[in-house]
Image (cartoon, rainbow, N blue to C red; front, side, top):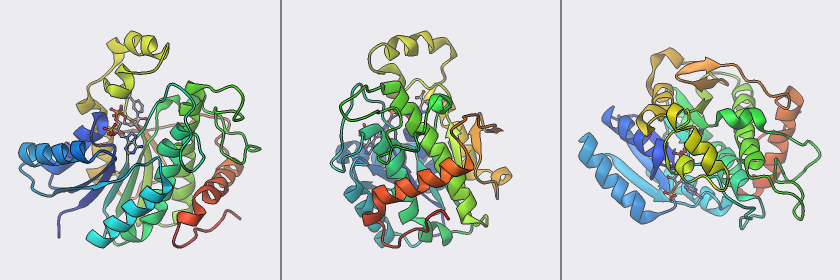
Length: 295
Ligand SMILES: NC(=O)c1ccc[n+]([C@@H]2O[C@H](COP(=O)([O-])OP(=O)(O)OC[C@H]3O[C@@H](n4cnc5c(N)ncnc54)[C@H](OP(=O)(O)O)[C@@H]3O)[C@@H](O)[C@H]2O)c1
């Protein structure tokens, strides 16, 4: 199979759906990781019809489960020997504290820990590509995210289990962690045979924005005049997946297909290393080959 292979999560809706379709039109073999088999099958038909590209497959996995993320990686590995582009696109914004079967707050697990695990599980396949590319969907709200080095369970904005829960704080922390992970992984990969970059897609008119919980729905509707379509929201991911300009560029944060400076006081060298180790503790039993700890 000579066409480049892209594994993308969260492609049954919004930004991911358009990203998958645009990459299919450019000749990629698309592998969609989705929790809903019916939506994935419909997407496969849609991509094949609209792109004229018959190479779209799917693997069913709920990213809120480490076990299912591991099975996703195993299924991918059985079917494909290499991976050219991994797009960790799926994301959730929940109205209240929800715990996963693994005992983590669900936004932190789906938005951050699942991409951390999936990426680490597929590094060997990415290395088999001429130049593997990892694209992680962050968000500009990362600027509001906090990292508490004393919280061993990666609380972010979630706070102690019985205490205050901030929806926005937790979502923002998950997106800050995605960014810190992107920077730390780029450092650990040393060479640029695999690159990893993070994306802010813009304020995009998707289900996540238009069905935001509580008072945030009002904020979303007030933002409509500056919002963009899913097609525009997919542009930076498609650019990072395909452009020769970003060959060898790693550990960067992109918005509107341009590098953007990262500004968050919690994003320090020490915190990135600590976050890596805490994340490793969280997923370690699901990793075949343990990844090195920060020294
Ligand atoms: N929209 C914005 O303004 C905006 C701004 C900044 C960043 N972002 C980020 O961009 C990414 C895409 O957002 P979007 O607006 O396109 O969101 P969306 O329209 O709500 O789509 C989210 C996608 O993630 C999937 N997903 C959610 N939970 C999952 C789980 N447990 N397992 C597997 N898949 C799951 C959904 O699958 P189902 O179809 O099964 O629900 C759907 O395909 C997210 O990471 C988001 O945080 C969005």
